[in-house]
Image 1 (spheres, rainbow over the protein chains, first blue to last red):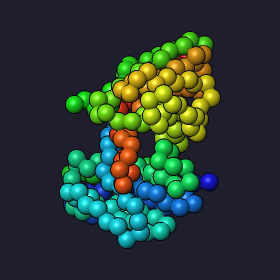
Image 2: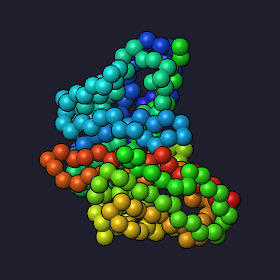
Image 3: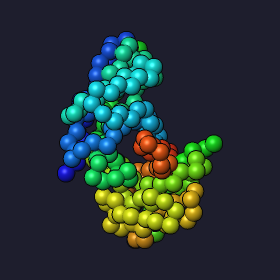
Image 4: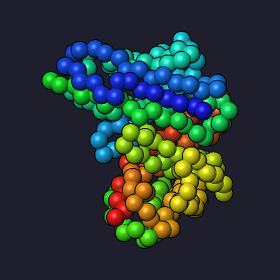
Length: 112
Length: 115
């Protein structure tokens, strides 16, 4: 069964204190791994898609990386506006394009 | 370009009542999805429509029905609401085709409370 585990569940950082969020996955062949940001009371907002081990993508203070077993979302010098829940999801080769399996997310709080 | 819109934003139902959650997208996407999000559970797929005229069950379809009204609209119906269906419901859409998978884009959600 495809599975996604995110850690930590919650993370509190001071503004400017860099850190990483982890997404471990178990799938029978990875088609794609997705990162989303979700603000309270809002829908998930797309950040990145990664397709193969070794791939990296960046957007402002965020950088996503992928290995064969996990993905990291690195946050460099975070600001309070980066506070949100970050969701990871995988799409397996054997389930086609339609089904994403989501982790439960990491709640990030950045204090000024 | 509003993206994915959902109505209503919030609804309170009594056990046994029925209701329909509406979703529309203006991005000309082919596929549409309904998810529910519960604390500690992550987003779970209820139903999806790969293209206009087709619908399929997801991970947690029991107690729900869907209709793909046209390319833009995909509705979710609760025929007889139960307290276990208290949740936040998200609609998403995705464009088909191309050498690279297109991601799913989410609406703002409908918060449903069943008493």
